Length: 99
Image (cartoon, rainbow, N blue to C red; front, side):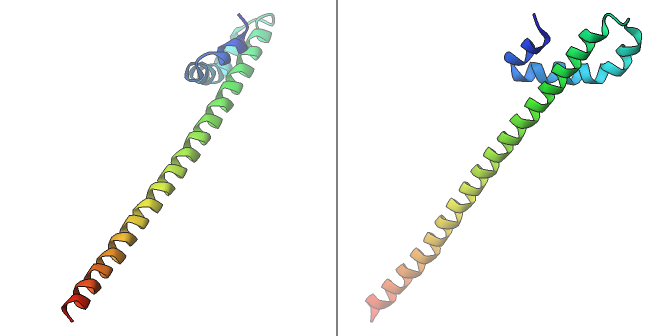
């Protein structure tokens, strides 16, 4: 199993593994012999890729949420406008009916 295969599965798992690997790399690097450093470098690169994927996913989710909030606010404004204008029209109709 290649280290980059972690990214092909669950994004959350990849992000957690990536953050953990990036955080532990400075501690593990001096302790490992020269032959293990390429593996560590590969794992760090995978962690950085996972972190970037997580950032992208969060940015997309944030944009979707902003769009949803804007749509909801626009609908509320329309409903309030309809209530205000509809209420005024009803009052005018009642006044006109009395005269």
